[in-house]
Image (cartoon, rainbow, N blue to C red; front, side):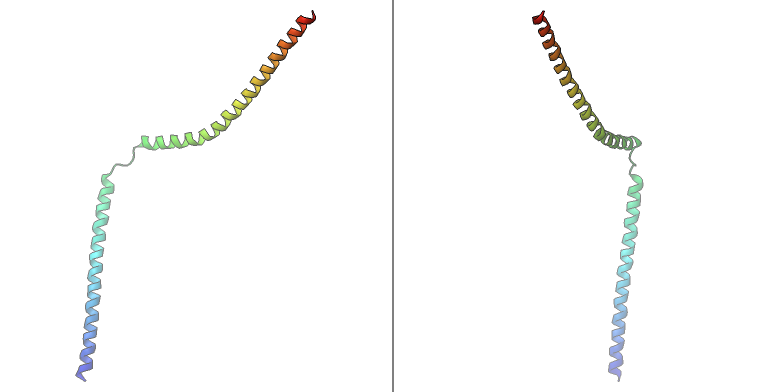
Amino acid sequence: MSQPTLFQEELELNELRERERQLLRREREFEENQKRIARERIERDSTMPPLEEIQLRRKRKQHEMIVSRGEVANVRRDQNRSLALLILLIVTTCTLVWWGLQLMRGA
């Protein structure tokens, strides 16, 4: 009878040792995490935040990108209108020159 109880006690003892090892491992991990968090906090506190000027530049650049898309369409539209007007003016000028020459020949 002493054999089975001894065997069971050894199993329980082994189980307790394993749990103790796990707890020690978790304790080490916890300490390492605390140190890492402390290092990260110190690093974050020691780094300078971005200057307000940099943020303004980023906002201005983004605004210019948005505005420039619309401006490109507006400029193209204006150029197309100007080109059409130029062609009409050239045709009108040619017509007036032709009409003037016709009047000179007829007179």
